[in-house]
Length: 130
Image (cartoon, rainbow, N blue to C red; front, side, top):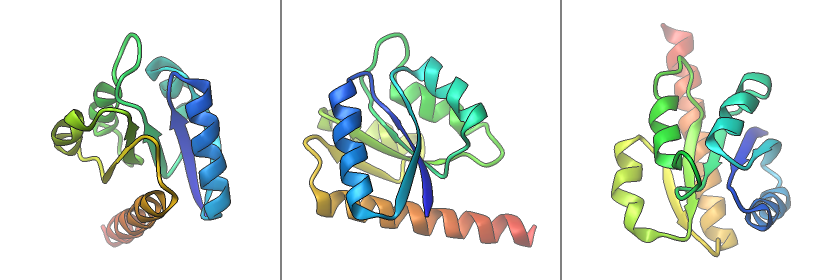
């Protein structure tokens, strides 16, 4: 079971994504955040395997958070979930493992969860072999 955090400034978007993730049954949403600052605070208390991240938020963007996460020893996998398709190239520059455009379709979310799971398995194996 993957531990997930949802970061989106819109509560209905967080609720919808949580509902879809719960239906898939492979992730446990351990925290939700409405801003980048809140996400950073919650990450200290609720470490997660995967972060579902909106791009466009007040103060700091999801892209800025994803870039900051790269400095962690074990950064969570990042899946962007956004209404804007034009940030996809930037998302992959900060090592996102997937990019979903709202409204999220269940089968695309399933692919993203599978990709996150594979990513985490590879990173756990890599860190164990070091």
